[in-house]
Length: 58
Image 1 (cartoon, helix red, strand yellow):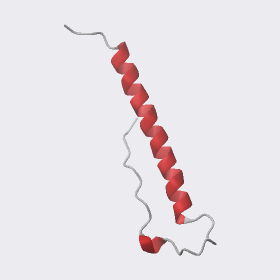
Image 2 (cartoon, rainbow, N blue to C red):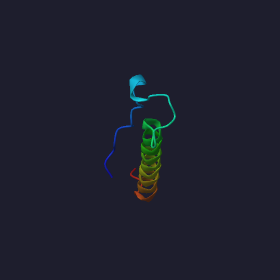
Image 3 (cartoon, rainbow, N blue to C red):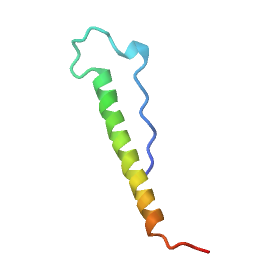
């Protein structure tokens, strides 16, 4: 699995602040952040699993 960069929040001027946009730039950011966090957790679990299954060297 490729490591992706954490999504950046929208710039201050990307959001109109009116609350009428659907989806809002913040909705998109939080959706991407959730996907990134899930991918990071999966990557960590894979790394831990590979460390557990690797034979110990002495």
